[in-house]
Image (cartoon, rainbow, N blue to C red; front, side, top):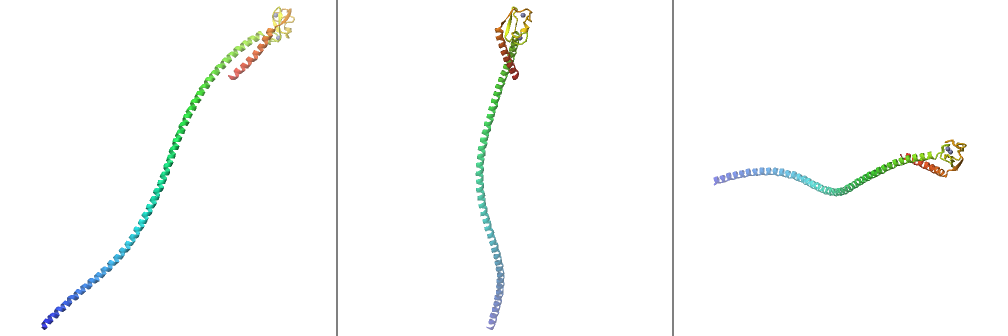
Length: 232
Ligand SMILES: [Zn+2]
Ligand SMILES: [Zn+2]
């Protein structure tokens, strides 16, 4: 019985020792677990901090994105307005350009018409000038002829004493020569042209009239000549 007790005691002691060994291992494991837990806790806190920072960054990024979207929308609206304005300006410019082109075309047509008109006027003027020159030449010719005729007439109606156109002419009878009544020294007592002694004198009203006419013609021809020379 005592042996049995001793064996029992030894078995218990061994059991206790095993349990103690197990307790030590458990305690060691617990300690390890505590260390691991506190390390995990520290990591969790770090992660929490990181998460918070990441969240803040994400919020900031979202806010920035929203801001960007708003400013992009505002920019798009502004650009749309500008495009609208530019389209209006473009339309106006196109209308202005078309109007200007029409004006240029009209001005060109007007210029061409004026050039044609000026050309026609110049030709008409040239025609008129050449007709005028012909008329001038005719006038000069007629004037020369008239002058010649007038000089011939004047010679016929010139008193051989005073060499002027007869003034109150008288015809000597019987020789028939004619002098001015006042040029009596040419026919008293003898006619200076034929040396005859005139019996009497008679007034020559026909030559008197012609003399007046030739003086008038002489003045008219002189005026005509001056005119022809002035316009030449
Ligand atoms: Zn005379
Ligand atoms: Zn005579």
